[in-house]
Amino acid sequence: MLGRVRALVMTLIAAALACLAGCGGGGSVKKSDYVVRADAICTNAVRATRSLRPPATVGTQQQQLESLSQYLGKLVPIVQSEASQIQALKRPSGTAQDKAALDRYLGALAKTASSYKDLADAAKRGDAAGVASAEATLRVNPVASLAMAYGLRTCSAAGGTAA
Image 1 (cartoon, rainbow, N blue to C red):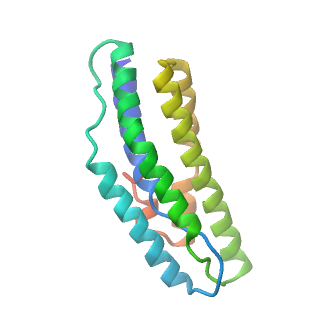
Image 2 (image 1 turned 135 degrees about the horizontal axis):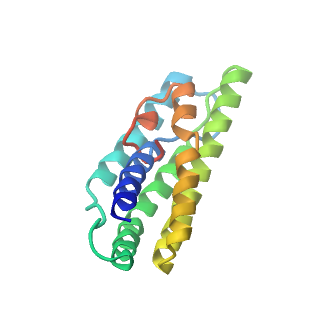
């Protein structure tokens, strides 16, 4: 269990930091301006996430889940804020391919925020199987690669909220 919790903590930190870089909105904005704004949101989320004390990886399974729950209670609002700020950005005009790439990224970003909430709920209930399931969902979410494909750098970096 100890190894799984450590791996989960590293996955959570990485995913949270990646998630914290965003996109959204509507209007005529240049893609480069959008990327700068979204990456700035992600940078702020990464800073906030790194300031959190990681959950304990020692003790009983119940103690580890309690520590994880406390950690996620602080992390989830950061992830949700990042996602909502990115969603609120005005979307750039661009090619159909760019618009589709941004749509895919934003969908994966929303799923990431939802998965973090599911993870927090499972940890709060002391549900190790639910934690494992939510962790697995986060691990397969393509948000980081979709951010990179769109041109976002901070939002796709390892150690980000969604990476």
